[in-house]
Image 1 (cartoon, helix red, strand yellow):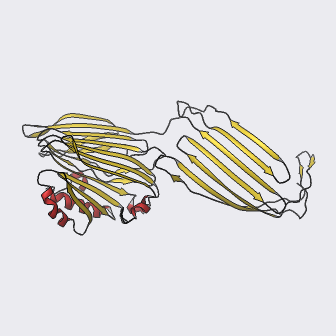
Image 2: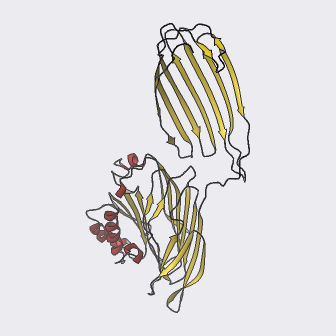
Length: 409
C-alpha cells in the first residue's frame, strides 16, 4: 500500500450460554466495535508484491472512522452445532455486510470424522460488489481417538437371617463400585465405595440391596459422593432397596455434592413387605461451600418411590435446573439454603413419634409430615454441619443414637 496504512479497532463481544433440560446449549452473542483508518486523508490504495510488481486499485477514499455491529446465535449439543452470524460495518461513504450460517457434526466411531461443515455466506460491500459463496469442508479421517471415558458400576447384595445372625447370601460387584463390611456386631454395616473418585456426565451407577425376613443391616457410603461438571449427558444413579417381613434396614448414605455444571438423573426405589422397618436419608449439597463455589448452572432430576406390599405409598419427584443458586434463593424453594435432606421412616409406632420429632427439630428449618404409614422430613440448612446435626436429631427419634462409623471418620 502507498504510504502507511494502519487500521486499529476496538471490538467487544458479549455472549452467554444457556443450557436447557433437554441437553441443548443456546448461546446468543452481541458484537459492537469501531475501526479507525490512520491513512492520510484521501489516500489511494495500492498493492506491491515482493518482486516490486505493483497493482493499483480503483481510488477509494475510506472514511476515517467506521462503526461495527453484529450478533449471532448458536444452538448445539455434544456432537452437533448450528450457528448463524450477522455483521455490518457502517461509515459515511461505504458499508459492508456479512451473513453466515454453519452446521457442524462430529461422529465418534472407532475413527473420528470431524468436522463436517456446510456454510453459506452472503456478502455485500458498499461499492457494488456482490458475492454469493457456498463452502463445503469434506469429511476427513483422523487418527483413532477414544470417546470420553465413562464410568459404570453395579452392586447387587442380599442378606438373610440364619440362626439369629444376618449373613450374606448374594454379593456381586462390578466396575467402579465396591462394597465392604465394617464391624462385627449383630447389625452388619455395609459400605459402598465408588473407586472412580466421583461421578461425571454419562456415568452409570446401579445399586440393589435386599434383606430377607428378620435380617437387619445398615447401608452407607464411604464418603460424600461428588457429581462433577457434565459435558452434555447426565449421570445416572439408580438405587433399589428391598426389605422382607420383620427386616430392619437403615439406608444412610453420606451427602451428594453437586458441582457447578452438573447433570444428574437419580432414582431411589424402596420396596417393603408388611412388618418391615425402614429408615432412609438422602442429602444434597449444592456446590463446594468451603470454597465459595456458586452453582451457576445444573440439572437435577430426583425421584423417590416407596412401596409397601406392592402398593405405592409415597412418591417424591423433584426437578431443579438453570441457575441453581437463584432457584434456591426463592422463598418457596430453598430460602437461600445451600444443603437439603429428605428423611423417611416406615415402621410400627413411627407415626406416633411426630410430636417428639418436631420438638427435636426445633431451631432447624424442617418440615415434618405423616401419611399412609410413612413419616417424611424435609430439612434445609446453610451448611453441611448444620444439616448433619438436624439429621442426627431426627434419626435419634427413631432409635438410631449414632451415625455409621464412616460418617465419623
